[in-house]
Image (cartoon, rainbow, N blue to C red):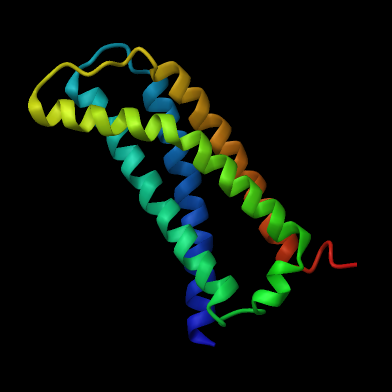
Length: 152
């Protein structure tokens, strides 16, 4: 019982952390007007928290759905809202590809003391805000799933 409780609580906290981190990244990107290292670092810190929270969500969610700690994989695989949640996750991951690649380049540039190319920061801010909306939709799907909504 303790493991299920721990995984559920960690999963919920990771949703909160993910939402706040991706919103913070979007805000930091939107306010980025120059390549001042401290401003770029704010973006990268929020991005790191976003990445860690996403990893925690995937690991705890995977354990809960397929690790035998919750209702079992049969329940999840036949739950329509689980498929909605996984579709939203795939969309978030696809949207993350371009910002992730660019922000890795920013990290490398900062490490080498070279100029950071911030011309796509506005686009990545918009992507972050769309991802935040998708995280909220995932939370809504998760709460319905936990209550058996959609099982007929």
